[in-house]
Length: 130
Image 1 (cartoon, helix red, strand yellow):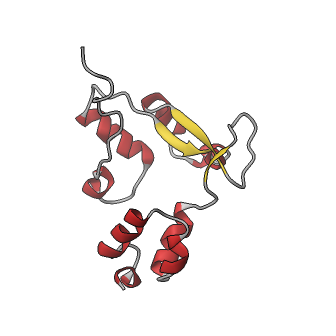
Image 2 (cartoon, rainbow, N blue to C red):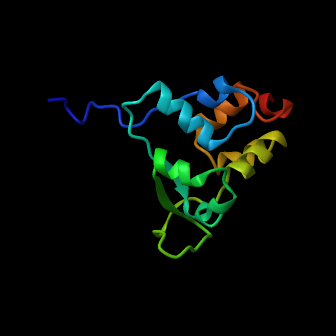
């Protein structure tokens, strides 16, 4: 028997970068499924996104491939979604602040390693490396 403590439960992939072009969740999940047919995937989303799934491309198919795990998010109350677990910060806000070079503000919003990565990779604009 495999020791469940040693098993890899989560994997970070660079698939969206490798695929290039428009980033769509369904495209990413279908690619990962083709590469790893033995994987059982789940999509972790904030409770605020539950209200927007009708805007997602083929959310029905996304649900088949990677049933969502919905976690609460500060500042959003959605029926049938657990109490907030995620901070009141969005990836959109992080990208905008990185592009604007607002590093001091970002220190309070993201882990140090994430901030260092954003700057080292010069993500989200020329200001990212400064």
